[in-house]
Image (cartoon, rainbow, N blue to C red; front, side):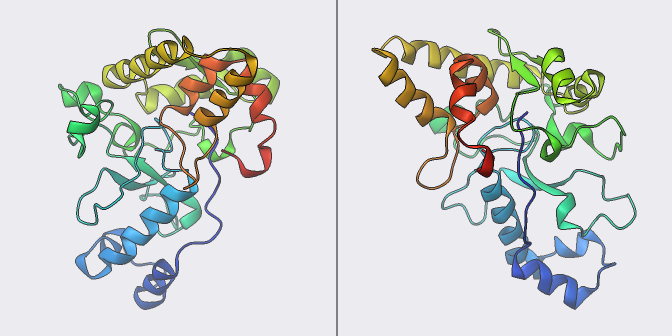
Length: 256
């Protein structure tokens, strides 16, 4: 998990929905056919705010040219069942489908990180979290810029960095609980992160000298010209550490 910024302004279409339907309208009404374009607009705004990554597992949820197909959804950090939070845009992030649907670009990436059977064991993110409103759950928008409170091992497993949590004033137990609630060590995610890390190992063999290394790290850990980040940001961040932390200190104002 990484820090993401809170969406500063909800899109105009969502404001129009609330004006037309009322602030107490059920979320299901916003998901109806009538408001489909506005729902897509809100998804786009949230995903763009997150540089194209799932708020929890960091899978790529960017969807160029797919207006009628979806590999992402709007997730309520505090469940919709909680009073007055269903239509609160400050309670929303963009997430993947949690392993419940096959990838839409299987020819491109083999569906890695998106689907694996049995579904029940490999469900993650909002699908795994469901309607639980656990007070220990850590909202990714509250995480610090630096340091990372999680680390990824050689085998792709993600775990809490207890020392980093303590230095940042976060509860290691809360972080552990959050990783479990989101099932971020589901086998499909662990294997996808391991594959990503192994690819970085292979690429590193072609890097010649510290200057080239610096350029490469920046290309992996900072947004491209379209504002997108590469998938599995935390995996890359851990792989490059401590050099990654030095570079990321230059970007606290945007957070990546």
